[in-house]
Amino acid sequence: MSSTAEPRLITVAIHTYDHAVALKALLEGEGVKAVLQNVNLSAPVVSSGVRVRILEGDLPKALRIIENRDIFLPVPGDGEKRQEGHFILVPVDFTEHSIKAVDIAFGIGARHHGRIVLLNAFLDPDIAIPSQLSDTLSYEDVADAELRRELDIEARHTMELFARRLRERIKSSELPAVKFTTEVLEGLPEEVITEYAKENVPSLIVMGTRESDKKGRELVGSVTAEVLDSCRFPIITIPESASFRDLSDLHHAVLFCNLDQDDILTMDALYGLFADRSLCVTLISIPDRKGGGRLRRKAQSVEPLLEYCREHYPRFEYHAATMSPGNLVEDFEALGRDRHIDFIVVSNKKKNMFARLFNPSLAHRLLFHADIPMMAIPV
Image (cartoon, rainbow, N blue to C red; front, top):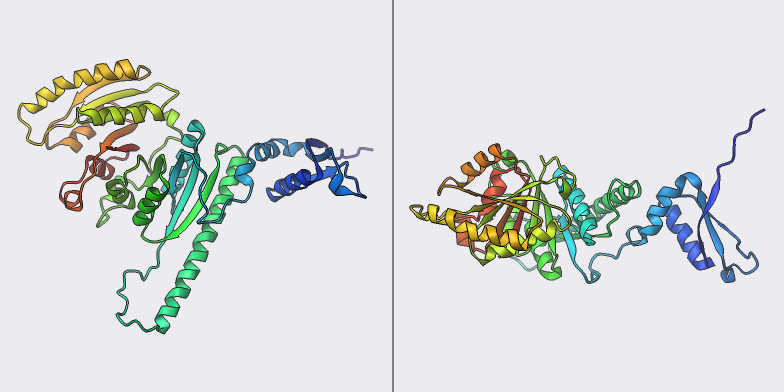
């Protein structure tokens, strides 16, 4: 006659009563059954050495939760002041390309010991309809207020479900254990992202983008392009067609340089991002649009920058290439066919509205023509 062995309980922690109860609630809230042992039933509050016990098979998940309590404990509500320290801002709209950006951001956060803020912007679909000029309250005003309230509730509920899925992926080791919080704000996405960044100063923004053929069909431009043009923080763009899961999968970067001091700032940012590994970097001097003999002189003058990089950023391997004026995007595509390019790095100069419309930045142009991850550094 055979009998089925009882599931084995193991002690995962020993605490005072209050701490043991809190840990039990945390574990059970994340789906790990827990029991308390050695509780003084006549005076439980004064119990010491209370054991928190779980099923042996739940140990890996339980340890993951215990070692990262700040991830699984309730997060601060919207509007609460953020902790000091650098963080990565990740705008999300819950599409596939924004989810891919979240995955990459978690890898960067784990590598650089940063935290993540997930930001979602919701917009009243009737926002573009001109409102009446009268100051009197109408039924339409009441209906609009009710609609905004419903949209706000729906957006926060969607974000909470998304955050819950991320915590499940952290528990199963599918994502690295990085602390994250969420924000849900009303407004145009590009304006919400830019204003939030100005107020909270992220060390990096990571954004997903659509494929280049889809971006090309958009009438005005993607949210990512608008943020690139107006936001003065480092931005990494992740195309939806990107196949890599982590920065360690990237091996060859192209850095567009102006042959001035801005190149050093851009190179320093790239070196810091890949702080623990090597990378092959091709320096490309941006040709003058006037062309002429300046192209040859620029090709020659990139040599001092090469030597500087080899001396001060020795972990990388360096090469140089040139491109012809007026054919920057075409030449870049040809270079990509000759050498597999994993990553684009470009300095991003601030421009006024007129210049952005009629003379878009290199980062803006490459965003619409290349399905390659890109880092834009404001200079």
